[in-house]
Every structure is written in C-alpha cells, then in structure tokens.
Length: 139
Image (cartoon, rainbow, N blue to C red; front, side, top):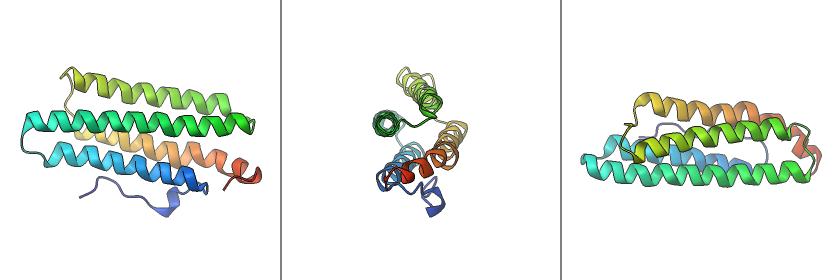
C-alpha cells in the first residue's frame, strides 16, 4: 500500500521535472513501506536509513536540476525558490541525521510533514515556474 500516489494534477508540464516528482513520491512511498511493513526493528532502521538517504540525495539532484535551468533562463524568482529548496534540504537532512543517531522514530507525523513538503513543492512552488519555462521553450 502506498502512502501517496502520483496524480496528473501534479504535472508542471515539464517532462523531466514531472519524472523527478514521480520519483520523489516513489521514494516517500518506499520509506513508508520500509517503516510500516518490516517486522524486525533493527532491519527496519537499516532499511529506513538507506531509503531516507536516497530520498535526500534524489531531492538534492532534483533541486540542482531545477536551479540550473532557472539560472540558465534567468528566472526572476530564482533566489526565493532556491531559498525554499535550501530549507527543504535542511529539514530532510535533519530527519536523516536524527534517524542515524537513533533519536527519531519515523512517525506518522514525520510522514505527513514529508508528504506536505512534496505536495507544496510540486503543487504550489513548482507550478509557479511552469509557465515561465514553457514560454522559454522548455517542455
């Protein structure tokens, strides 16, 4: 069972970034499954740590790709958007580091925060650049 599913309403109309967003949702679902379907707590911690690290690394990859295109096209909201990226990376990294130290259990509250982050990032923040990119020939 997935925690969250891709829906076409999430599409920003930029093929590569839509694929990135689908992957982010898949990674969130993978973390969710590792936490709630594993019966061995030690195994769960190892699997969850690896999956959280993958989520963090893929998020960095995605944000770097967005930011590179924004800079190339001189996107007027670049600094604001990058600031949000930096904030999200810090939040996810805090979860990863807390989990590594054994100080956090991945509760439903943490998953809701991750889900909210992905949904706000896609449905609000990334939708803001969509038209600008399209007007500059990016599809």
